Image 1 (spheres, rainbow, N blue to C red):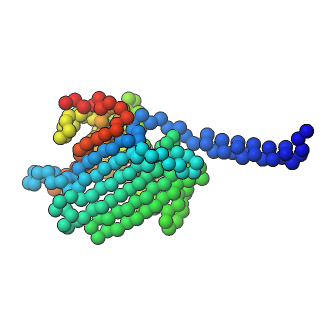
Image 2 (image 1 turned 120 degrees about the vertical axis):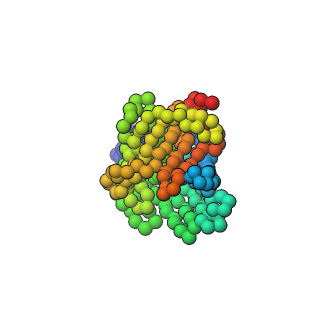
Image 3 (image 1 turned 90 degrees about the vertical axis):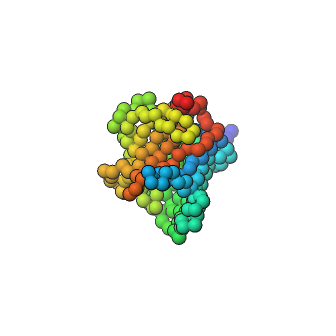
Amino acid sequence: MLSYRTIELIFILSMYAACGLNSQENWRSWENEAFKPGEKLQYRFYYDAWLTGKITAGIGTLEVKTTVRTFNDRQVWHIDTEGSSKGMFNWFFKVRDEFDSYIDKEALAPHYFIRRTREGGYRKEDEYRFNHEQKYVVTRTDSMAIPRYTQDFVSAIYFARTFNSDTLEVGDMLPVYFFLDDKVYNSAILYEGVEVVDIELGKFRCLRFRPGMATGEVFADKYPMTMWVTDDKNHIPLLVKSAVIVGNVKGELMSFEGLANPLTSRIE
C-alpha cells in the first residue's frame, strides 16, 4: 500500500508535469512551408541613378543554419544575417553589420536576438531575450512589456514569408509587431498585386508589397519602400527598392541555395 508521502510526491510530480505540458501546448503552432535550415540567400545592394548607372555598395547574406539549438526547452532555428560594404564605399562609409535571431521552430517567434552594427563612425549593439509566455522582453539596459509573439526585425522577415498568398487581394494589409531600438513597432505590409520582375538572375513572377514605416503604436501614412517576393511557396525577397533624393537604393538577389520548394515563379 502506498504511503501518504508517496501519494503526495506523485501528486506534486503530476502537477509539475501537467504545468510543463500546458506550457508547451500554450504556444501557437504556425505553419511554415516557405523556408528550412540550409537556405542561404545572397544579395547585392546598389545605388541606381540615370547619371551613374548601378554602383554596387555592399553585399548581404541571410542564412538559416542547419544546427538546431534549444532555448527555454524549445527547439530554435538560428538565422544569421550579415552585411558589408564593398569597394570604394569602404573608404568613406565602411559597413560591417551582423544580426542573429534564434526563432522558435514551431511558433516562429524569436527567443533571442543580437545585433552588432558598424556603419562609418556609428556603433550599436543590442541583445534581446524574449519571454512570450510572460509577454516581456529583456534588453541590456531594461525590460518591458510586449504583445505576445512580437518579432525582432530579422525574424519578422521570415515570419512574413509564411503568410498564405493564395487568399490575398490588392489592398490587404498584413500586420506585424516587431521590437527594435527598445521600442515595439506596430506595423503592416501593404499588398499591391502580382508583377513580373526582371533581374540578373532572370525574370520572376512576384508579389509586390510595401512595408509600412510605423512609429510606436501608430501606423504611418507613408510607405517609402517597395519589396517584391517570389510568387511561389518560398516567398523569397527578390528585390527591394527605396527611393532617395536622386535615384534609388536597391537590394537584389544574387544567389540562393537550400530552398524548401521548387522556384516555380521563375519565368526565364
